[in-house]
Length: 292
Image (tube, rainbow, N blue to C red; front, side, top):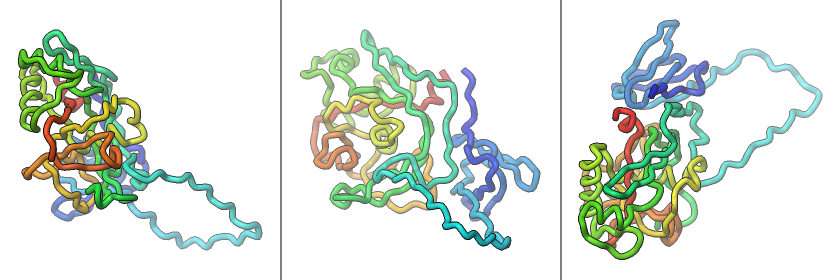
């Protein structure tokens, strides 16, 4: 398969790339690969910048015009604005939107013994992660912050009891396997990864929220009506400086994040891992599939 680069829509607009050392580069971005480098034209010279050195990418503010504006006798036409829904969504305020146009299969099958886990492609993009509306403080969902995700696959439903049986030889009650603890879920995913020779893992919280809440992803996954383990340690959201790529939460903590469609306030509610026997899905970055 041919992996196409991540292309910027605003290719002919002047952009500002702020490096981690504080330097600013101004030019026209031609392409961006979030896991490698971005290519931009600066003063007529095409330049590559490693993404590891990039702190922020923004559209340059338009220079104020010095041209006198003509006087019009007719009243100005009022602009019609499309209302923007609240809550996590594709970032309506970000001018530079990156889309992953690589040639990934839309659906994959991961074979575990006699069972096949259906994996659905979630194409990368931008999202305002979190919620600052009604009950947001009690939901631990503030502040809203922009994140960027590269494409990934996630199982369309929880790991089933049949899959767990193929891995452990132990029968479980119910259609889906409820892991006693986060470690149990993570260890089972590690067994799957070893069996398939793929870097399978639990989905990050950002991946879970993007798959569950971003408008372009709605209805792709079976809600299943239960709490789900995420990969991340639980922490309160902190205001960031610009767009964060593929966030994975803090490096350590006391307990992990649990997300669900049927929490008290719905799928926007964040919760600590405070009860046992939660369900889980598996995820993998799309690039890791292409490498195989």
